[in-house]
Length: 165
Image 1 (cartoon, rainbow, N blue to C red):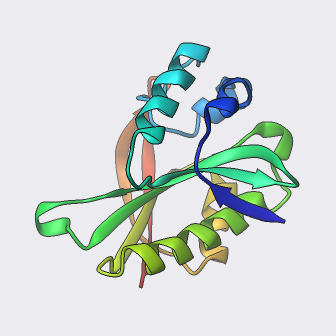
Image 2: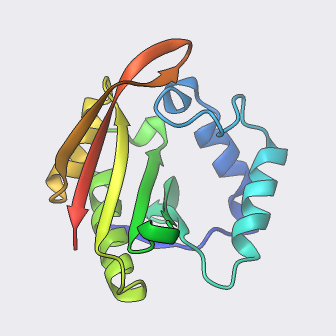
C-alpha cells in the first residue's frame, strides 16, 4: 500500500539516509546536493513545511518513507503545465512504489490543480526504469532532446515524457 503525505520534521533522518546515494543522484538534476547532509534535509523540510499547500510529498509504503515525489507549476505562457519529479530509495527499487506514487500524484494534480492540462517529466537516456514508470501511467515520449543535458560531465540525451489531462 502506497500513500503520499506531507513531509514532517521527523522524516529528516530517513530522508538524509535514503537520498544520500550516488545512484539516486545520478538520475536527478544537479541542484540536489551530493553528498546530501542533515542540513540539506532540514532546508528542504523547512521549505516544504512552511508552504500553505505543498507540491512535494513523501512516498510512504507500509508505514515507511521510501522516496519523494512532487511537481513544479510553471508560469507565464506555460501556466497550465507542470513538471513532475520523483525518486525512490535504492532499497525499494523494483517494488512498484514509483509507479503507484506517480498515479497518486496525477490524481492529486487533477483534484487540486484543475487548470493543469499538461504534465511532463524529463528522464536521462539511461534511466529505463523511470521511463517504464511513466509509460505505465499513460505518459508518452514526446521528444528526445539530443545532447540536451550534462550529467557527471557526460553530455546525454534527455527524454521528455508527457501526460495530457
